[in-house]
Image (cartoon, rainbow, N blue to C red; front, side, top):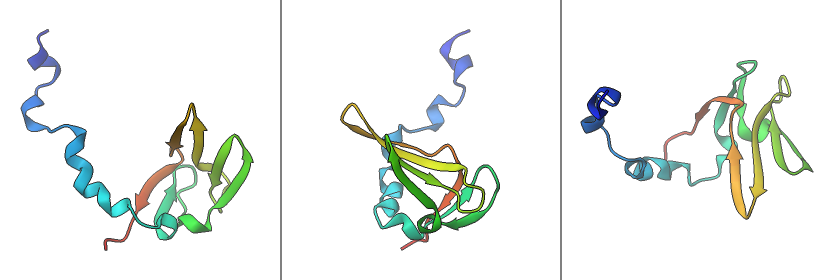
Length: 94
């Protein structure tokens, strides 16, 4: 199998740096952003979620079912954000 077979659309993409402009909209206070829980499907403002700080980092839980939405931790001097519990994250355009 040659590389054209592995990635038939290689000529149709850019690298992730091309996303920088679109991501600028997230450089705001995100507590009013709506997030949908991947576990129960409820949607609420990020600021309405339950924040637990007595862990090796910060854990944000769904206010409806208490499933973990995201974790923010310091790992080897880097801030690591894990968002496995969020199905959708919506920010109102500026």
